[in-house]
Image 1: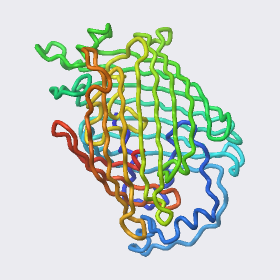
Image 2 (image 1 turned 180 degrees about the horizontal axis):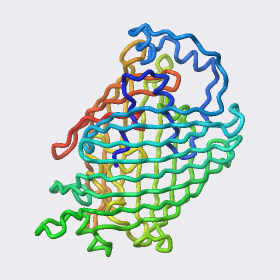
Image 3 (image 1 turned 180 degrees about the vertical axis):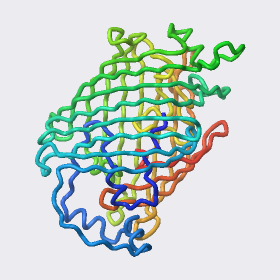
Image 4 (image 1 turned 45 degrees about the vertical axis):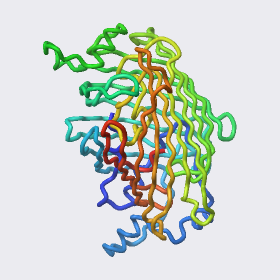
Length: 418
Protein backbone atom coordinates (compact mmCIF):
# COMPACT_ATOMS: atom_id res chain seq x y z
CA UNK A 1 0.00 0.00 0.00
CA UNK A 2 2.92 2.33 0.25
CA UNK A 3 4.73 1.82 -3.03
CA UNK A 4 4.09 5.39 -4.17
CA UNK A 5 7.13 7.08 -2.53
CA UNK A 6 9.56 4.29 -1.83
CA UNK A 7 11.09 4.57 -5.34
CA UNK A 8 12.94 7.72 -4.27
CA UNK A 9 16.70 7.20 -4.72
CA UNK A 10 19.04 8.55 -2.05
CA UNK A 11 20.09 12.06 -2.97
CA UNK A 12 23.72 11.18 -2.27
CA UNK A 13 23.76 8.90 -5.30
CA UNK A 14 24.83 10.23 -8.68
CA UNK A 15 22.21 10.91 -11.31
CA UNK A 16 23.74 8.27 -13.54
CA UNK A 17 22.93 5.62 -11.00
CA UNK A 18 19.58 7.15 -10.25
CA UNK A 19 18.51 7.11 -13.88
CA UNK A 20 19.20 3.39 -14.08
CA UNK A 21 16.17 2.66 -11.95
CA UNK A 22 13.60 4.48 -14.12
CA UNK A 23 11.08 2.08 -15.59
CA UNK A 24 7.80 2.26 -17.49
CA UNK A 25 4.87 2.02 -15.08
CA UNK A 26 1.87 2.64 -17.35
CA UNK A 27 0.20 0.04 -19.52
CA UNK A 28 1.72 -0.46 -22.96
CA UNK A 29 3.89 2.66 -22.80
CA UNK A 30 5.19 3.41 -26.30
CA UNK A 31 8.83 4.04 -27.07
CA UNK A 32 9.59 7.71 -26.46
CA UNK A 33 12.67 8.47 -28.51
CA UNK A 34 12.94 12.12 -29.55
CA UNK A 35 15.44 13.14 -32.25
CA UNK A 36 18.83 13.97 -30.80
CA UNK A 37 18.67 17.55 -32.12
CA UNK A 38 15.31 18.05 -30.38
CA UNK A 39 16.66 16.72 -27.08
CA UNK A 40 19.82 18.84 -27.30
CA UNK A 41 17.77 21.96 -27.99
CA UNK A 42 15.39 21.24 -25.12
CA UNK A 43 18.09 20.72 -22.46
CA UNK A 44 20.38 23.54 -23.59
CA UNK A 45 21.01 25.78 -20.59
CA UNK A 46 19.41 23.39 -18.12
CA UNK A 47 21.14 22.22 -14.94
CA UNK A 48 20.24 18.94 -13.27
CA UNK A 49 21.44 17.09 -10.18
CA UNK A 50 24.30 15.47 -12.11
CA UNK A 51 25.70 18.89 -13.06
CA UNK A 52 25.50 20.09 -9.45
CA UNK A 53 27.05 16.85 -8.17
CA UNK A 54 30.04 17.15 -10.51
CA UNK A 55 30.57 20.86 -9.93
CA UNK A 56 30.58 20.50 -6.11
CA UNK A 57 32.65 17.35 -5.79
CA UNK A 58 34.92 18.05 -8.78
CA UNK A 59 34.73 14.38 -9.64
CA UNK A 60 35.74 13.83 -13.24
CA UNK A 61 36.24 10.34 -14.54
CA UNK A 62 37.79 9.19 -17.77
CA UNK A 63 35.15 8.47 -20.34
CA UNK A 64 34.83 4.80 -21.12
CA UNK A 65 34.37 3.73 -24.73
CA UNK A 66 30.68 3.71 -25.57
CA UNK A 67 29.14 0.48 -26.73
CA UNK A 68 25.47 -0.33 -27.03
CA UNK A 69 24.80 -2.84 -24.26
CA UNK A 70 22.03 -5.38 -24.69
CA UNK A 71 21.56 -5.68 -20.92
CA UNK A 72 22.45 -4.05 -17.61
CA UNK A 73 22.00 -4.46 -13.85
CA UNK A 74 21.84 -1.84 -11.07
CA UNK A 75 21.45 -1.94 -7.28
CA UNK A 76 20.10 1.15 -5.50
CA UNK A 77 19.15 1.96 -1.90
CA UNK A 78 15.83 3.83 -1.56
CA UNK A 79 14.18 6.10 0.99
CA UNK A 80 10.79 7.80 1.12
CA UNK A 81 8.07 9.27 3.30
CA UNK A 82 4.27 9.63 3.43
CA UNK A 83 1.90 10.25 6.34
CA UNK A 84 0.56 6.71 5.86
CA UNK A 85 3.87 4.86 6.01
CA UNK A 86 6.26 7.11 7.91
CA UNK A 87 9.86 6.83 6.70
CA UNK A 88 10.57 3.84 4.48
CA UNK A 89 13.98 2.32 3.69
CA UNK A 90 14.79 -0.39 1.19
CA UNK A 91 16.76 -1.59 -1.81
CA UNK A 92 16.02 -1.97 -5.50
CA UNK A 93 17.64 -4.23 -8.10
CA UNK A 94 16.83 -3.29 -11.70
CA UNK A 95 17.83 -5.15 -14.85
CA UNK A 96 17.31 -4.19 -18.48
CA UNK A 97 17.53 -6.00 -21.81
CA UNK A 98 16.66 -5.48 -25.47
CA UNK A 99 14.76 -8.34 -27.10
CA UNK A 100 15.11 -6.85 -30.56
CA UNK A 101 16.85 -4.10 -32.50
CA UNK A 102 17.29 -1.15 -30.08
CA UNK A 103 16.35 1.26 -32.87
CA UNK A 104 12.85 -0.24 -33.12
CA UNK A 105 12.35 -2.01 -29.77
CA UNK A 106 11.73 -0.48 -26.34
CA UNK A 107 14.05 -1.51 -23.54
CA UNK A 108 12.59 -4.32 -21.37
CA UNK A 109 12.89 -3.89 -17.62
CA UNK A 110 12.99 -6.34 -14.69
CA UNK A 111 12.82 -5.10 -11.12
CA UNK A 112 13.05 -6.49 -7.59
CA UNK A 113 12.22 -4.17 -4.70
CA UNK A 114 12.04 -4.59 -0.91
CA UNK A 115 11.37 -2.06 1.85
CA UNK A 116 10.42 -1.66 5.51
CA UNK A 117 9.09 1.44 7.25
CA UNK A 118 9.02 3.06 10.65
CA UNK A 119 5.32 2.14 10.90
CA UNK A 120 6.21 -1.58 10.88
CA UNK A 121 5.23 -2.05 7.25
CA UNK A 122 7.03 -4.31 4.77
CA UNK A 123 6.86 -4.97 1.04
CA UNK A 124 8.56 -7.21 -1.52
CA UNK A 125 7.73 -6.50 -5.15
CA UNK A 126 8.81 -8.13 -8.41
CA UNK A 127 7.90 -6.56 -11.75
CA UNK A 128 8.64 -6.98 -15.43
CA UNK A 129 7.83 -4.93 -18.51
CA UNK A 130 8.85 -6.82 -21.65
CA UNK A 131 8.75 -5.62 -25.26
CA UNK A 132 9.21 -8.11 -28.08
CA UNK A 133 11.06 -7.24 -31.31
CA UNK A 134 9.57 -4.21 -33.00
CA UNK A 135 7.27 -3.58 -30.02
CA UNK A 136 4.62 -5.89 -31.46
CA UNK A 137 3.79 -7.26 -28.01
CA UNK A 138 4.12 -5.83 -24.50
CA UNK A 139 4.01 -8.18 -21.48
CA UNK A 140 3.72 -6.70 -18.00
CA UNK A 141 3.56 -8.35 -14.61
CA UNK A 142 3.56 -7.27 -10.95
CA UNK A 143 3.92 -9.51 -7.89
CA UNK A 144 3.48 -7.98 -4.42
CA UNK A 145 3.83 -9.59 -1.01
CA UNK A 146 3.77 -7.67 2.26
CA UNK A 147 2.06 -6.37 5.36
CA UNK A 148 0.66 -2.90 5.89
CA UNK A 149 -1.74 -0.69 7.81
CA UNK A 150 -4.63 1.46 6.56
CA UNK A 151 -5.79 4.50 8.55
CA UNK A 152 -9.40 3.70 7.78
CA UNK A 153 -12.45 5.99 7.95
CA UNK A 154 -15.14 3.82 6.39
CA UNK A 155 -17.19 4.25 3.21
CA UNK A 156 -18.29 7.33 1.34
CA UNK A 157 -17.60 11.07 1.49
CA UNK A 158 -19.30 14.01 3.18
CA UNK A 159 -18.82 13.20 6.85
CA UNK A 160 -16.10 12.97 9.46
CA UNK A 161 -15.78 9.48 10.94
CA UNK A 162 -13.57 7.92 13.63
CA UNK A 163 -10.23 6.56 12.46
CA UNK A 164 -9.91 2.79 12.93
CA UNK A 165 -6.56 1.42 11.69
CA UNK A 166 -6.63 -1.91 9.84
CA UNK A 167 -3.56 -4.14 9.78
CA UNK A 168 -3.31 -6.97 7.28
CA UNK A 169 -1.05 -9.04 5.04
CA UNK A 170 -1.51 -9.21 1.30
CA UNK A 171 -0.43 -10.92 -1.91
CA UNK A 172 -1.24 -9.39 -5.30
CA UNK A 173 -0.31 -11.04 -8.58
CA UNK A 174 -1.14 -9.69 -12.02
CA UNK A 175 -0.09 -10.37 -15.60
CA UNK A 176 -1.02 -8.44 -18.76
CA UNK A 177 -0.45 -8.87 -22.50
CA UNK A 178 -0.92 -5.93 -24.90
CA UNK A 179 -0.84 -5.53 -28.66
CA UNK A 180 -0.28 -2.34 -30.68
CA UNK A 181 -3.22 -2.10 -33.11
CA UNK A 182 -2.44 1.27 -34.69
CA UNK A 183 -0.35 4.36 -33.85
CA UNK A 184 -1.02 5.48 -30.27
CA UNK A 185 -3.73 2.84 -29.72
CA UNK A 186 -3.32 -0.39 -27.70
CA UNK A 187 -5.53 -3.28 -26.64
CA UNK A 188 -4.83 -6.01 -24.12
CA UNK A 189 -6.06 -8.53 -21.62
CA UNK A 190 -4.88 -9.79 -18.25
CA UNK A 191 -5.55 -11.73 -15.11
CA UNK A 192 -5.17 -10.74 -11.46
CA UNK A 193 -5.08 -12.66 -8.16
CA UNK A 194 -5.40 -10.69 -4.91
CA UNK A 195 -5.35 -12.18 -1.39
CA UNK A 196 -5.78 -10.37 1.93
CA UNK A 197 -5.15 -12.24 5.17
CA UNK A 198 -4.63 -11.85 8.94
CA UNK A 199 -6.94 -8.84 8.80
CA UNK A 200 -7.16 -7.39 12.32
CA UNK A 201 -6.83 -10.83 13.89
CA UNK A 202 -5.23 -9.22 16.95
CA UNK A 203 -8.67 -7.75 17.74
CA UNK A 204 -10.30 -11.17 18.14
CA UNK A 205 -11.76 -11.40 21.61
CA UNK A 206 -11.53 -7.64 22.22
CA UNK A 207 -14.99 -6.48 23.27
CA UNK A 208 -16.58 -3.56 21.45
CA UNK A 209 -13.89 -3.02 18.78
CA UNK A 210 -15.18 -3.76 15.27
CA UNK A 211 -13.45 -2.20 12.28
CA UNK A 212 -15.23 -0.94 9.17
CA UNK A 213 -13.80 -3.94 7.32
CA UNK A 214 -15.42 -6.29 9.85
CA UNK A 215 -18.84 -4.64 9.60
CA UNK A 216 -18.72 -4.42 5.79
CA UNK A 217 -17.62 -8.06 5.48
CA UNK A 218 -20.47 -9.34 7.66
CA UNK A 219 -23.02 -7.25 5.76
CA UNK A 220 -21.85 -8.44 2.34
CA UNK A 221 -21.07 -12.06 3.13
CA UNK A 222 -17.26 -12.00 3.24
CA UNK A 223 -15.01 -13.73 5.79
CA UNK A 224 -13.83 -10.81 7.97
CA UNK A 225 -10.22 -11.97 8.39
CA UNK A 226 -9.24 -13.18 4.89
CA UNK A 227 -10.60 -13.18 1.33
CA UNK A 228 -9.70 -13.37 -2.36
CA UNK A 229 -10.52 -11.05 -5.29
CA UNK A 230 -9.43 -12.69 -8.54
CA UNK A 231 -10.52 -11.63 -12.00
CA UNK A 232 -10.04 -11.09 -15.71
CA UNK A 233 -9.24 -7.74 -17.33
CA UNK A 234 -9.74 -6.19 -20.76
CA UNK A 235 -7.95 -2.93 -21.53
CA UNK A 236 -8.08 -0.23 -24.23
CA UNK A 237 -5.63 2.67 -24.25
CA UNK A 238 -4.89 5.78 -26.31
CA UNK A 239 -1.64 7.65 -25.68
CA UNK A 240 -0.18 10.73 -27.41
CA UNK A 241 1.96 12.12 -24.58
CA UNK A 242 5.36 13.40 -25.66
CA UNK A 243 7.09 11.76 -22.65
CA UNK A 244 6.02 9.29 -19.93
CA UNK A 245 7.58 10.77 -16.77
CA UNK A 246 6.91 14.48 -17.19
CA UNK A 247 4.79 15.26 -20.26
CA UNK A 248 4.59 18.75 -21.70
CA UNK A 249 1.69 17.97 -24.03
CA UNK A 250 -0.56 15.17 -25.18
CA UNK A 251 -3.47 12.97 -24.11
CA UNK A 252 -3.65 9.66 -22.23
CA UNK A 253 -6.94 7.70 -22.04
CA UNK A 254 -7.26 4.29 -20.40
CA UNK A 255 -10.32 2.06 -20.10
CA UNK A 256 -10.31 -1.21 -18.10
CA UNK A 257 -13.12 -3.72 -17.66
CA UNK A 258 -12.56 -6.05 -14.70
CA UNK A 259 -14.65 -9.15 -13.99
CA UNK A 260 -14.02 -10.96 -10.70
CA UNK A 261 -14.91 -14.64 -11.11
CA UNK A 262 -15.82 -17.22 -8.46
CA UNK A 263 -14.33 -19.98 -10.65
CA UNK A 264 -10.99 -18.15 -10.28
CA UNK A 265 -11.31 -18.21 -6.48
CA UNK A 266 -13.05 -14.88 -5.78
CA UNK A 267 -15.41 -14.80 -2.83
CA UNK A 268 -17.99 -12.97 -4.98
CA UNK A 269 -18.50 -12.21 -8.67
CA UNK A 270 -18.26 -8.53 -9.63
CA UNK A 271 -18.05 -6.33 -12.71
CA UNK A 272 -16.19 -3.02 -12.57
CA UNK A 273 -15.20 -0.43 -15.13
CA UNK A 274 -12.17 1.79 -14.50
CA UNK A 275 -11.46 4.98 -16.44
CA UNK A 276 -8.50 7.34 -16.54
CA UNK A 277 -7.77 10.49 -18.52
CA UNK A 278 -4.70 12.72 -18.40
CA UNK A 279 -4.39 15.87 -20.53
CA UNK A 280 -1.41 18.25 -20.77
CA UNK A 281 -1.20 21.78 -22.24
CA UNK A 282 2.18 23.51 -22.64
CA UNK A 283 1.60 27.23 -22.03
CA UNK A 284 4.85 28.68 -23.35
CA UNK A 285 7.10 28.10 -26.34
CA UNK A 286 10.06 29.61 -24.51
CA UNK A 287 9.44 27.53 -21.37
CA UNK A 288 7.58 24.38 -22.54
CA UNK A 289 7.77 22.95 -19.02
CA UNK A 290 5.20 25.57 -17.98
CA UNK A 291 2.26 23.17 -18.12
CA UNK A 292 -1.39 22.96 -17.15
CA UNK A 293 -2.25 19.32 -16.44
CA UNK A 294 -5.59 17.65 -15.75
CA UNK A 295 -6.22 14.17 -14.29
CA UNK A 296 -9.46 12.22 -14.09
CA UNK A 297 -9.65 8.77 -12.45
CA UNK A 298 -12.75 6.71 -11.73
CA UNK A 299 -13.87 3.21 -10.77
CA UNK A 300 -17.51 2.18 -10.95
CA UNK A 301 -19.18 -0.99 -9.68
CA UNK A 302 -21.60 -2.26 -12.32
CA UNK A 303 -22.65 -5.52 -10.71
CA UNK A 304 -21.91 -7.72 -7.67
CA UNK A 305 -19.63 -6.67 -4.81
CA UNK A 306 -15.92 -6.56 -3.98
CA UNK A 307 -14.13 -7.14 -0.64
CA UNK A 308 -13.53 -4.15 1.61
CA UNK A 309 -9.78 -3.83 0.97
CA UNK A 310 -10.42 -3.94 -2.81
CA UNK A 311 -12.75 -0.92 -2.78
CA UNK A 312 -11.43 1.98 -4.91
CA UNK A 313 -10.47 5.18 -3.13
CA UNK A 314 -7.68 7.57 -2.19
CA UNK A 315 -4.37 6.14 -3.42
CA UNK A 316 -5.97 3.50 -5.67
CA UNK A 317 -4.03 4.48 -8.82
CA UNK A 318 -1.02 2.47 -10.01
CA UNK A 319 1.47 4.60 -8.09
CA UNK A 320 -0.86 5.29 -5.11
CA UNK A 321 -0.70 9.09 -5.46
CA UNK A 322 -4.37 9.99 -5.81
CA UNK A 323 -5.53 12.51 -3.21
CA UNK A 324 -2.57 14.54 -1.99
CA UNK A 325 -3.60 16.02 1.39
CA UNK A 326 -5.09 12.71 2.57
CA UNK A 327 -3.72 9.37 3.71
CA UNK A 328 -4.09 6.27 1.53
CA UNK A 329 -7.65 4.87 1.63
CA UNK A 330 -9.00 7.95 3.45
CA UNK A 331 -12.08 7.95 1.22
CA UNK A 332 -13.45 4.89 -0.57
CA UNK A 333 -16.61 3.24 -1.78
CA UNK A 334 -18.12 0.78 -4.26
CA UNK A 335 -17.80 3.61 -6.82
CA UNK A 336 -15.19 6.37 -6.66
CA UNK A 337 -14.37 9.43 -8.79
CA UNK A 338 -11.38 11.77 -8.63
CA UNK A 339 -10.12 14.75 -10.63
CA UNK A 340 -7.21 17.12 -10.23
CA UNK A 341 -5.80 20.23 -11.91
CA UNK A 342 -2.12 21.14 -11.55
CA UNK A 343 -0.07 24.12 -12.73
CA UNK A 344 3.66 23.45 -13.26
CA UNK A 345 6.20 26.25 -13.70
CA UNK A 346 9.99 26.79 -13.66
CA UNK A 347 11.52 28.72 -10.78
CA UNK A 348 15.22 29.05 -11.67
CA UNK A 349 16.48 30.03 -15.10
CA UNK A 350 18.57 26.86 -15.36
CA UNK A 351 15.44 24.74 -14.62
CA UNK A 352 17.06 22.96 -11.67
CA UNK A 353 14.16 24.06 -9.47
CA UNK A 354 10.52 24.27 -10.46
CA UNK A 355 7.23 24.38 -8.64
CA UNK A 356 3.62 23.23 -8.79
CA UNK A 357 0.28 24.21 -7.33
CA UNK A 358 -2.61 21.76 -7.34
CA UNK A 359 -6.28 21.38 -6.49
CA UNK A 360 -8.18 18.10 -6.38
CA UNK A 361 -11.62 16.76 -5.48
CA UNK A 362 -12.82 13.23 -4.80
CA UNK A 363 -16.18 11.62 -4.17
CA UNK A 364 -17.30 8.12 -3.19
CA UNK A 365 -20.56 6.25 -2.67
CA UNK A 366 -21.49 4.04 0.26
CA UNK A 367 -24.14 1.41 0.97
CA UNK A 368 -26.45 3.55 3.11
CA UNK A 369 -27.83 6.09 0.66
CA UNK A 370 -24.84 8.29 -0.23
CA UNK A 371 -24.59 8.35 -4.03
CA UNK A 372 -21.53 9.14 -6.11
CA UNK A 373 -21.10 12.92 -6.73
CA UNK A 374 -23.32 13.86 -3.76
CA UNK A 375 -20.44 14.96 -1.50
CA UNK A 376 -16.99 16.17 -2.56
CA UNK A 377 -13.77 16.24 -0.53
CA UNK A 378 -11.25 18.87 -1.74
CA UNK A 379 -7.49 18.94 -1.38
CA UNK A 380 -4.98 21.63 -2.34
CA UNK A 381 -1.34 22.49 -1.97
CA UNK A 382 1.98 23.35 -3.56
CA UNK A 383 5.32 21.71 -4.12
CA UNK A 384 8.94 21.93 -5.20
CA UNK A 385 10.59 19.94 -8.01
CA UNK A 386 14.32 19.20 -8.27
CA UNK A 387 15.52 18.17 -11.74
CA UNK A 388 17.49 14.93 -11.45
CA UNK A 389 18.08 14.13 -15.12
CA UNK A 390 17.39 16.67 -17.85
CA UNK A 391 17.57 13.97 -20.55
CA UNK A 392 14.61 12.01 -19.11
CA UNK A 393 12.95 14.98 -17.32
CA UNK A 394 12.94 12.90 -14.13
CA UNK A 395 12.59 14.90 -10.93
CA UNK A 396 12.18 14.68 -7.17
CA UNK A 397 8.76 15.85 -5.95
CA UNK A 398 8.16 17.34 -2.49
CA UNK A 399 4.57 18.46 -1.90
CA UNK A 400 2.56 19.82 1.01
CA UNK A 401 -1.19 19.38 0.90
CA UNK A 402 -4.16 20.28 3.08
CA UNK A 403 -7.74 19.02 3.05
CA UNK A 404 -10.93 18.62 5.07
CA UNK A 405 -11.15 17.41 8.68
CA UNK A 406 -7.67 18.71 9.54
CA UNK A 407 -5.91 16.60 6.90
CA UNK A 408 -2.44 17.82 5.99
CA UNK A 409 0.95 16.34 5.25
CA UNK A 410 4.19 16.17 3.25
CA UNK A 411 4.33 13.85 0.25
CA UNK A 412 7.64 12.82 -1.33
CA UNK A 413 7.86 10.90 -4.59
CA UNK A 414 9.77 10.24 -7.78
CA UNK A 415 8.54 11.96 -10.97
CA UNK A 416 5.32 13.88 -11.36
CA UNK A 417 2.18 12.65 -9.61
CA UNK A 418 0.55 12.23 -13.02
